[in-house]
Image (cartoon, rainbow, N blue to C red; front, side):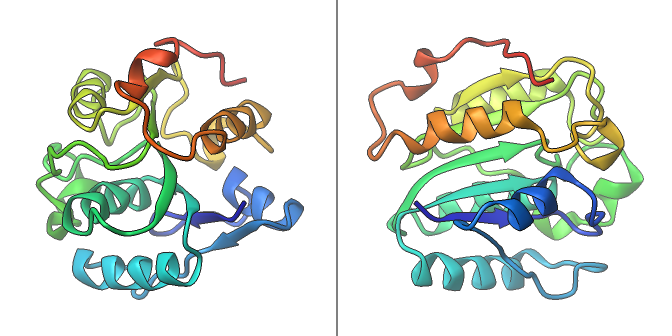
Length: 193
């Protein structure tokens, strides 16, 4: 199994994604261009190239990386993606300074994903209201995971190596084709600590 980590812009080197990358042989980071001023089209091209080199990979995106995965699924539904985990996706239409600086990533697509997916969202994420995240997960036919009050699920959230996230990744990697209503197979609340 290959896992492609799709980070957000400005990810701290001590976050769980960097730890997974350094500790697990099958994890590779997608290096995006211009992370300080990202543009969706260039990010999608880079991501598409990585998926082409690692067919059937599991994608794990955080923040803008998760948002980019949603756009990739809508624009390139035939790409050979095994599954995806979208952690704390950013809502480009949110009324935050961060979202306003990333207008090229919006609006979020509404098309169902052609692969199994989890959307992991926090009740205290400043970049995506949890109810809006739940609505998008439903439209994408992704299982929705309520992370409780965990902020943006980044280095500041205190997740460390995030073993519960690895457990989610293992569950997700077990699916090779999207079962009908994949989202119905998982509980709405899952302990992430």
